[in-house]
Length: 91
Image 1 (cartoon, helix red, strand yellow):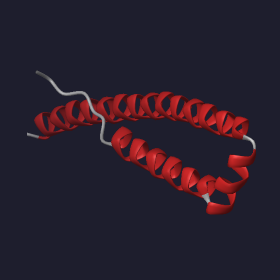
Image 2: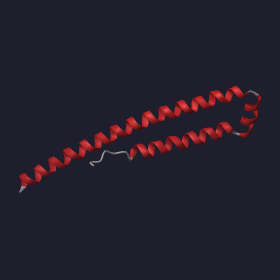
Image 3: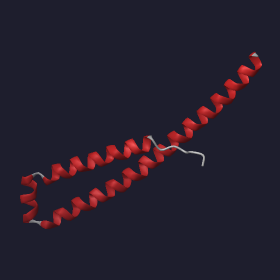
Image 4: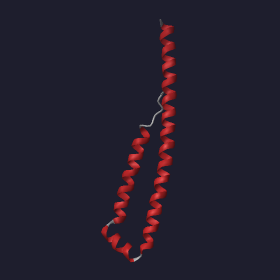
């Protein structure tokens, strides 16, 4: 009985640890790739907003920069939540 229990415990622990490590690795990779793509997109938007000249000064007074920061932060938070729930499933 003890041998059966120990065998089942080793099998379960091995599979559980493997699943956790694979899930954590995939989540980290997904989050890293998505965050870098989002950073590139935000850099592109902010660099092109600087080309607007006088219009950019008016937009800055209106708080467009802060709005972009809030939107970007919300997108990063959503990516982190989605990446943490990303797992492999058997089909």
